[in-house]
Amino acid sequence: MPEQITTKLPASLEDYAFVALGSNLGDSVQVMREAQARLRELSEYPLLVSSLWQTTPVDCPPGSPPFVNAVIGLQPREAETPESLLAQLQTMEKMFGRQPKRILNEPRPLDLDLITFGTATRNTPALILPHPRAHRRRFVLQPLAEIAPDLILAGQTKTVAALLAALDTNETVTRLA
Image (tube, rainbow, N blue to C red; front, side, top):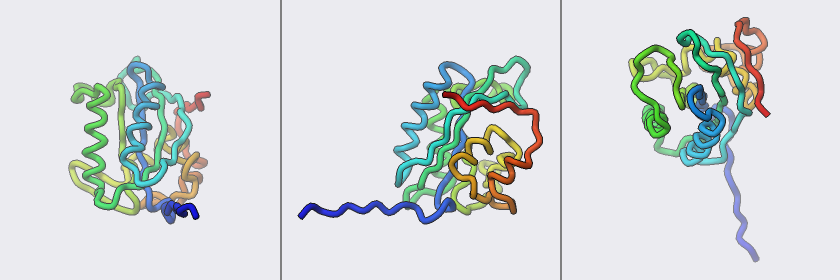
């Protein structure tokens, strides 16, 4: 008799860490695909992966190219902490050619922002969780609502879908084919 293999899936959305991905330098679509593949290595279970979205730059220098954005949900490994995951995300950004900031929000090949890590909260110079501006950014909420519409970010009372519906910004987001 063949062995039964069972996969324990995370119990709820609160068991996931959500990471926003962005790129507006180089072949952004390819960069996003490669980054998603590398992020799979950090997850205990299969990723939740949004579509790719082309978005207008927000708070970027004049003339900045549009971004390609997405959000993934990963199940952190047992010993993972928000700080250790953030360190891995920053290392990955450097592997993709990210340079130290010279100008705030300048174009970059890969930007990885830790939006949530389960229900953990942090407020340190190195890490604020949940991400302090995620609930006000369409380029985060649109892809996040696609994969976790019922998630409630720590400190918020509305779901991601409700935050998105109530958002009033000039941002343009377009799903890529």
